[in-house]
Amino acid sequence: MDRAELRSRLEAWLNSLDKKLERLLLLPPDYTRFNSGAGLIVQELYDILGGSAEIDIMPALGCHEPMTDAEIETMFGTKIPKDRFIHRNWRTDVVKLGEVPAEFVREVSGGKLDFSIEVEIDPRLLDSKYDVIISIGQVVPHEVVGMANYTKNILVGCGGKGMIDKTHFLGAVSNMEQLMGRDHSSVRKVFDYAEVHFLKDLPIEYILTVTTTKGDVTTIEGLFLGRSRKNFEQAVALSQQKNLDLLDEPLEKVVAYIEPDHFKSTWVGNKAIYRLRMAMADNGELLIIAPGVRHFGEDPLFDELIRKYGYRGTPYVLAMVEQNIDLQENLSSAAHLIHGSSEGRFRIVYAPGHLTREEVEGVGFEYRDINEVLKVYDPAKLQDGFNTVNGEHIFFVSNPALGLWALKKRFQ
Image (cartoon, rainbow, N blue to C red; front, side, top):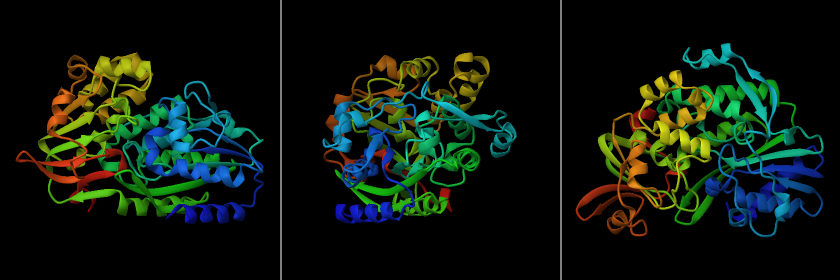
């Protein structure tokens, strides 16, 4: 889909909406999801409507770092005034709509969890001044919910600590390898419950993309417009075709590169672990080249907890949750620690741009000097897929955030 077709589709859809379009709130993803196509869509929506409507743009950060001015310009262009962008705080900018009851959570978790989940969203979504709230984002395999976006962009991207913490933990105890790349996960069922019971009367519309990226070129393969869950299901089906790389044999040595401008922490950089784990051979090696990684967590508290407990496997993390109030109060951190462990099945080696050997080994990973690694594995010279480097056979992934790699038998 080229830009002209994209604009035409958007214009036709906007004209079909039986709503005023005088005041709009746009909810795109943040810079870590640059390849979603959402930046281009926001630019087109602002160009189409900006002359006649008041438009606010609030990136759905979840618990990620706020976007910088430079990131905003790179993703959304320079024509949208900076004062149109709203920076939210997931810890404070929330209002509670209700709860997903404990008995429902107990059912979808197979009895592993027994707590209710607070449905909290940014209060701006309840502001009656907005005629339409447009959530924009990419449907792609995801480690917490199975397939990203749709109501996740509202409930997590624009949600509060209770929802973020508890759904992340629910996904972790549900076994991420059983839900990635699939709809109807335990976490998605919680989101569906919240949609039916708490969100259905809000003026939300969705623009969902499925994209592929080769080099610096991102292509929008599918565009799905409207509120219906069927649109999400169609996007899921297309993403499963476009964003899954299913392999016949497990991979012994994988080299993954995480781009420095988008990935500055292991919190997001560990997508290299999440998205490749189902393709890794037992006792294999996953080498992550991470020139931009300078800390572990996306905020100081998360960083402190990761340094304290490390990526040491599910049994250890669950035991630490039982014993320590700091993890009990920050379940998304506990979930992240589970997600980032290979459970001892394969080696994880980090070559970061800014962290020391002591820091990397202190959280349970192996360390390699990035300068030495880049002499051997130059991302600019490697092709996605199988390569031979100095007689060594490796599998290279230039951006693990773009999909999911797994053995075919895991999806049969």
